[in-house]
Image (cartoon, rainbow, N blue to C red; front, side, top):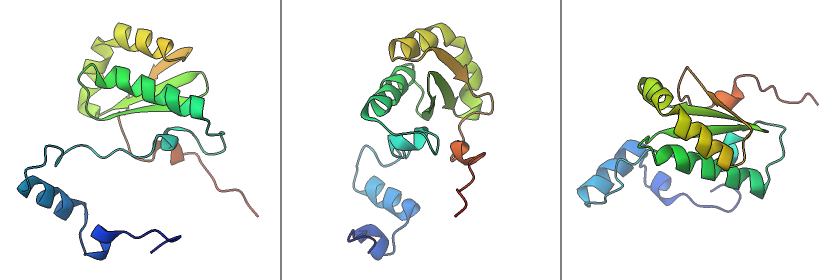
Length: 133
């Protein structure tokens, strides 16, 4: 238990692989759905997390997912959206650049950038350094 929150599957000794296996055996359609972190993880450390920024990220990711991309992250850098998809999907996303740019500008971004390295967990943490106390 952390901060009064219980984690029953973890307490039962189940990790992600066991949970997916159980969900598959139960016939759940989402047994292999990609995991998605909280939308606030798209906003760099030290940047205020606002409802509007979260909605903007959500709208932007919906645009890219609507083009058939399963693993999508739109990193929020103010008026710049940095789009990440699986590395093997980068070229396909680039082929849809007109639709992506139009959709992300409609979502409220001024500039749209494609991360050529592709999706990587924790990519916003590459340059973050904790404040010294």
